[in-house]
Amino acid sequence: MHKTKLALALTAALCASCGPGNSGDKDPAIPGTEGYDPAKIELARKSNCFSCHAMGKKMIGPSLKDIAARYRGDAGAEERLIHKVARGSSGAWGSIPMPANSPPVPEADIRALVKFTLELK
Image (cartoon, rainbow, N blue to C red; front, side):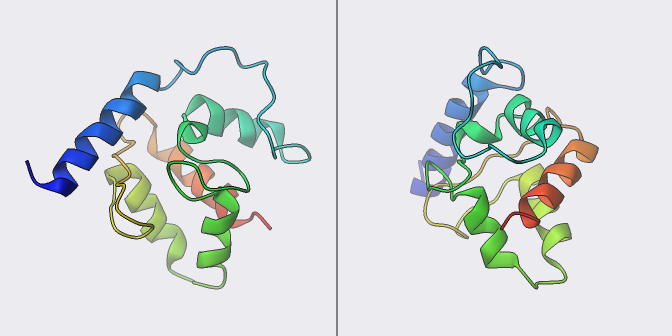
């Protein structure tokens, strides 16, 4: 199997094992989320963004704040990122691809999450 396809399959399997709503208790605090809109943090948690992303440090994927910094001032970034989150992408942040998040995560939620991410400082 081609390296990229293998990496995508492994990443998808990892994220699928956590699937929406399967990330355990919602009570444990997520580091770095203090002071942010609790509803947006909960949406990110239930959508499993925090399975691969942290607020301020790289995990499997880039930190949400690094994403915001990279795309700050880019007028077309929001639509491009919505597309990438929904359909998956690879190569923008290294060799580990991001699996598609739609249909498990509704498009309206993906839009809200991308907007929230791009507003981070």
